[in-house]
Image 1 (cartoon, one colour):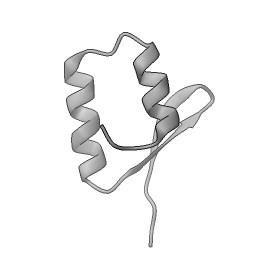
Image 2 (image 1 turned 90 degrees about the vertical axis):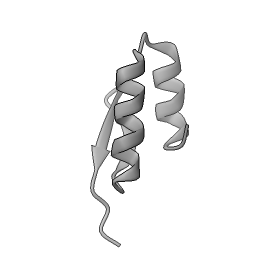
Image 3 (image 1 turned 180 degrees about the vertical axis):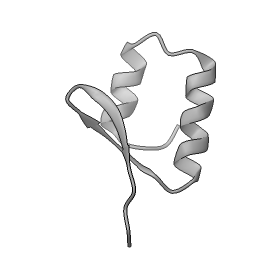
Image 4 (image 1 turned 30 degrees about the vertical axis):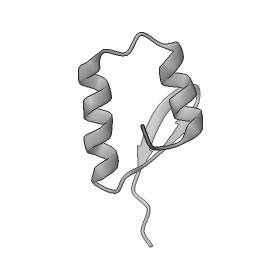
Length: 48
């Protein structure tokens, strides 16, 4: 799984279902960036 290592750690501790993990993969493939904000995974658009 790719993405922010902090988000990976957060999601590994929670009871995430397969559907949410698949949705995360789709979202990351769209070019959004993920971060941990206030103890939860959040997504943002990064203009480069």
